[in-house]
Length: 301
Length: 249
Image (cartoon, rainbow over all chains, first blue to last red; front, side):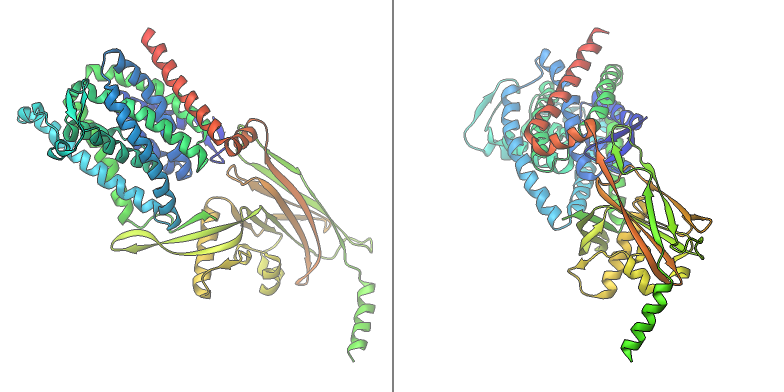
C-alpha cells in the first residue's frame, strides 16, 4: 500500500509504517515507555528525513501515552502536582532543546550529537536495568530495591513543597530540573524520555514506585504536545500522514502490550527491555566508529 | 580577409539551413497526490529538415532539470575514531532533479567543451560552487554530491535512452521518482550533428502537489500553530479512542 507523505515529500509503504508503529506500541504497553527511542532511528533507517522523523515520532508518543495516563489516573497513579512542575520544566527544556538543535545543525554536528546522546544514555540506562533485573532474578538484590531515598543533593535544595502523591517533602526545583533535562532530550532526540524519567524519579527524587509510571506518562504527554507545537512553529517537520499511520499501529499495539504485561514477570520484562535498549545503543555506537554509508550530507541553505 | 571569410561562410550556411526541432512532453503537469509513487515522462518530437528530405544522421540529447536550490554539502571525516562532519562547501544552484538521455554515448557525439557548455552529462552539471577555492576539493565535493543524488534516484544518465526513428522522430523515457521536489521542470532537447549543436528547444513540465497533499503542505507552512494543535488533537483522540475501544472488548 503506497502512501505519499506530504511533508516528508516521498512515498512509503504504509503497511511497513503501521507495523513499525505496532512494534513500538507493544513495547510501550509492555514496558510503560513511549517507544520514541525506537521509532525515530527506524524511521530514519527507512529513509524519512531525520527532522521529520524526530518531529513526527514525538507527536506519535503523545497519542501512545494518552490511554496510559487515563488508566493510571483511574487508579490514582499520577502525582499531578509533581507532574505539572515537571511539565513546566519540560516546556522550558523543549525551548532550550530547539535552540541547541539549531546551533548544532548550523555547525553541522547534529548527527554526531544525537548519536552520542543515544549511545551514552541508552547504554548507561540499559546496563543499570540489566544489572538490577539480573540481581532480582537471582534474588540477591531484594534489599536494594526496597530502599527508597532521594539523592542527598535534592535534600539540599531550598524552598520545600509537599508532594502527597509521591510521599515526598522536597524542593520543587528538583523535579523542575529533571523536567528541563528531559525536555531538552525530547526536542533533540525525538523521544518521550520515559526511559530516563522513570529511573530519575526512582533514584534521584526517590518517588514512591506506584506513581512513577503514571506521573512519567503524564509528563511525557504534555512535553510531547509542547514539542509538536514547537516543531510546527519552527522546523515545520510534523508529517500528519506519517503520524496517523504510526498511531494506527501504536495505539492498537499498546493495548496488546499492556495485556501481555499483566501476564509476564516484571523482572523478565525489565531484562528484555534492557536487552533492546542495549542493542540500539550498541548499533548507534558502531555507527559512530564504522565508516558511514554516506560520507556527504546535504543541508538546504 | 576576414570579411571575405564571413561572406564565404554565409553563402555556405544559407545553402544548408539548420533543421527545426519540434519537441513535446507526454504531460505538462505532473500531479503529486495521495498514492503518488513517481511517474514516467515521455519526451518525444521530430527533427524537421527544411529541405524536406529526412535528415542525415542526427543525434538527440535530452536534458530534464528540476528547480535549482542552494545547498551546503558537508563531508564526514574520521576524527579520534569518530566519524563527524568536517569540511563543507556551498553550491548555489543544485538542480533538485537532473536526467540526461542521449541516442549515443556523449563522448562520441560531442567533445568535452561542448558537453560542458550544454551540461550533457552528470559531470558537467553547473553547480556554482562557492566557499572553497581549491579546484581538487571542489571536484571531490561535486562528485560526492552527484553520487549521493544518483543513489537517491534524482540524478541519472542514460547514454542509449533516446530512440530515433527514420532520422525524424525521437523519443526518450525518463522516470520521476516519488521523492521529487515540486516546481517547474525544464526539458531541453538538442539536435547534434558532427559535434555541433544545430537546434535546440525547451518544454516545461509543472510538478505540483494537488488536493489534500497541497492543502496539508500549505496549512503547515502558513498556520504552524493551528497545524500543530491539529496534529496533537488527532493523536490525543486516536490514543483515547483506542483505549476506550479496547476497554470494552
